[in-house]
Length: 211
Image 1 (cartoon, helix red, strand yellow):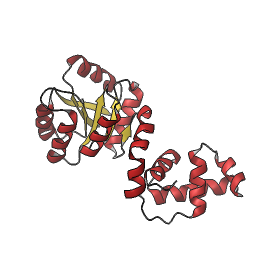
Image 2: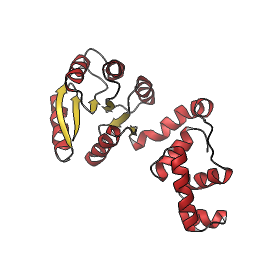
Image 3: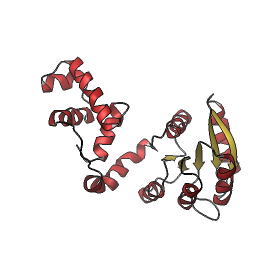
């Protein structure tokens, strides 16, 4: 079971989240808090797997709470769940150590999937925020996160075509490979990038400034 601490100053939001998470058989609400100090106290006492944290609360913001939670428990996954999609907030939250930033308009099934993924160590971001974040961090990614890899020029070409939505068959036709060969090469690329699937590999290669 994945234990989740709910942090929001609106009881109706807490109750709604409880009902949503109750539909997932592998998630359990281990507690709730209504401000930053309560979140820190409950995290210290309960050691949840995931903290679902509102951005605007009495006393301290979700960004400030994230920094303090990281000092209390560096292993807990922290997801900001908010109505505010401003890129400045997203940047501040991620820089503070948040593992995800989801909007309250996120469909229940995506919220549940996001919590599961965050508990496994993968960062989460509402799809509608992705373009803005890539633009915001694009220059920094190219300057600071481009790392040495053993990806060949051919590998990067496959990634570039995959990023544009090309199928394995289309990539094969364009690069002189069979569809099976492309599929096998993609598996090697996934391993080199530490990616689990095509979308993850494309996102990681963009983040590193490789394509």
